[in-house]
Image (cartoon, rainbow, N blue to C red; front, top):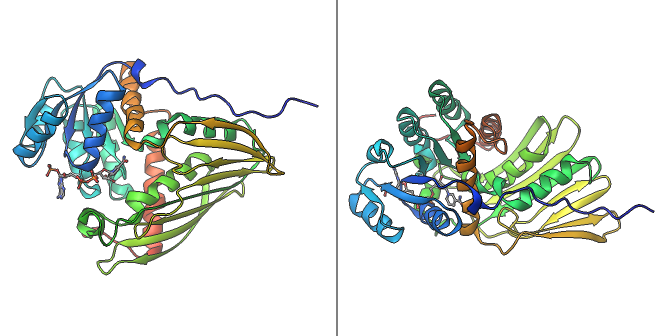
Length: 346
Ligand SMILES: NC(=O)c1ccc[n+]([C@@H]2O[C@H](COP(=O)([O-])OP(=O)(O)OC[C@H]3O[C@@H](n4cnc5c(N)ncnc54)[C@H](OP(=O)(O)O)[C@@H]3O)[C@@H](O)[C@H]2O)c1
């Protein structure tokens, strides 16, 4: 008898080993708080500047995060020679405009997910980056976590056999009593771009070429999606079943099922968490403990990935290349087309 299959070890470097980077933050809202805290506590870098539409808000933000320069505009952040890289954390509707500021100023940029409102905007931004030779990365931070690397290797090495099914869900109770941003069509709100993108991006990382997308959804009175159910099929016959809602918290688990074994990824699947390798008889063969679910600390991994990519002189991360970012936007465009969500001006 051969040795029992084991999970591969993650290849993810310690974020503290990445070169120090001086960050400029555009749009210091909710997630920018988490990002700045993660940069300070989990990397050798620092937030050295922040720009808000309101100078007082920028001042309060920099005071909380190490005392960098506060600006009353986004333009001033990208023009600051002390800023090595820019982090854009505005609503989806404004990512193109704000990331272009950085690209046109010749600054590398990390753009919050969803990258843009749609695939057309994503292509425009990446074409500008291509023309300038600039670095751009979608801030789908989970991609850079150690347990995602365990999953990628387990699937890529054939440990699970042939891929049969990926399933993942992401629901949070953010509507109608949550942030206004998610309810507003003009800010490109809805469950898919905010929450559904996590399971969708996870599935896109593992599936081959997606041949079919079948989606159903329910809309709010203002016409953004409240809940979506999506099935993807790839050219090899693997399926992905994806659920998302902003109306209630769901389990937020994932599984990756192959003909020989499956991976069970604990709640919250897109944050640092546990992965179990389970055989066809339901026996747990191995487990990887990715740590406690701590979303904020996990953001240090994307910041470190940017620092490593810049040190290596590359324009895109091999863990989330531009082509994948565009592909994910195309999948979301197709889901929105099927469920009937159009943002103003599209
Ligand atoms: N990685 C994660 O875990 C995570 C978690 C939550 C959200 N996100 C993503 O991060 C982005 C921001 O989300 P958030 O929850 O941080 O939003 P938020 O708290 O509303 O902050 C967004 C900021 O954008 C700025 N802004 C610029 N133009 C705006 C406009 N027309 N309307 C409203 N705000 C505008 C505002 O800053 P100033 O007015 O001060 O300039 C605002 O504070 C989204 O892409 C979201 O999907 C990521």
